[in-house]
Amino acid sequence: MQNVLDLYRQKQLGAADALGWVKDGDSIVVPTAASEPPELLTALGEARRKFRGVKVYQLLGLGDYGYFDPETTDHVRHVAYFLSGTTRKPCQEGWADLVPNHFSEIPRMIKRGELPADVLFALASPMDEHGYFSLSLGADYAMAAALSARAIVLEVNPNVPFAYGECHVHISQVAAVVESNLPLREVKMAEIGEVQKAIGAHVAGLINDGDTLQIGFGGIPDAVVTQLTHKRDLGIHTEMIGDGIISLWESGAITCRKKNFMPGKMIATFALGSQRLYRAMHHNLMLEMRPSDFVNDPAIAGMNDNLVAINGTLQLDFAGQCGSESLGYKPFSSTGGQTDFIRAANRSKGGRGIIVTPSTAKNDTISRIVPTLAEGTFVSCSKNDVNYVVTEYGVAQLRGKNLRQRAQELIAIAHPNFRAELTEEARKMKLL
Image 1 (cartoon, rainbow, N blue to C red):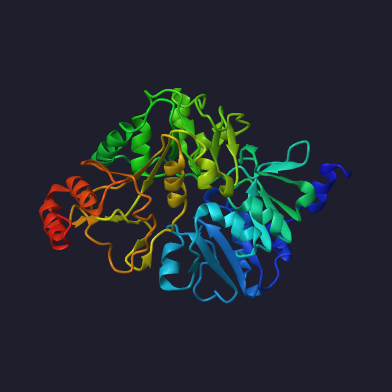
Image 2: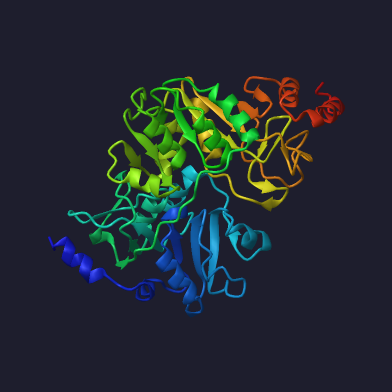
């Protein structure tokens, strides 16, 4: 077998030259968030007018690259699996696209040919002595794309941690290697206000020693995390690993010893946080990064006993339907792993699915608990799946409850300023 270092040297290219692996009409797959390769995507943006009909598929894009240009979408066009601050406006204005999906199903859709994957552009750790790179920041759907793509182009950065799990690509599979040394994209823990603290306290009261957690990013999840340091033997099976989870691990609250499924291991599919997180991931035997069709699959995640899934929503109606991804008909994010993990928690022995939301929006002028979702709202999580709902005013438990009981439970945790109005609407709907 050829020496892996010789193979590496043969495949080294500059970012502009590596674009030679992209053909007109290709679909380029880019992993989630911090795992996007900035040198490659910058080069693609600069050279966009040289291509025709190229599409870039990505979940939660962070960088504002040159191809985010409404004048050049015939050359290179962004297609989102989940919107971010960078991609939201282009999609709402119609010059970028959004593909509805469950995060767990993106790898399967790629394998089945329902989603295209001609070229994979990914950020990777330096190669180890056996010729393997770690796609530690985003195993997600990248591993499926690596199997389907005509060409794998890696941007190799010494700042990327080498993680374990199912997130490795061998040099023999790679078409081109581009070296970079840019700092990794960082996202700090969110600021935690009084509302977030109150919600966090209610959620913490639903979590027991030995539970396994799925927890996302943002002020409310971070508020939950800060109130769990006194817990013991928590486990992790989550789509995103961030600084909050690392803080809990460093506090001793996370040991994964009580997990019945993959005991002793924290399981995640992508990483987004600060340098502290990325350092903690490096050669950490306790952590495994795996594709989202493993991590997010409700049948697999639900094998964890006492799985607690914590996810947010923008709006919730009396039936329990969650509008978590659009403002009316305008897309704001996407489904992500919300439905995956709510269903996983419902399958889990002793599991609890928790939807969290502040009771109001826009400085207490809009109730997030409403009689019916706003016209055109995308339903992210159905009334049949939702169990616990938490606001700063308390906990509503919906699963097994009829529509009348659900309305009563939700009105009780709405903002006091809206309870009379909501009660009157419930009466009109014959729910009270």
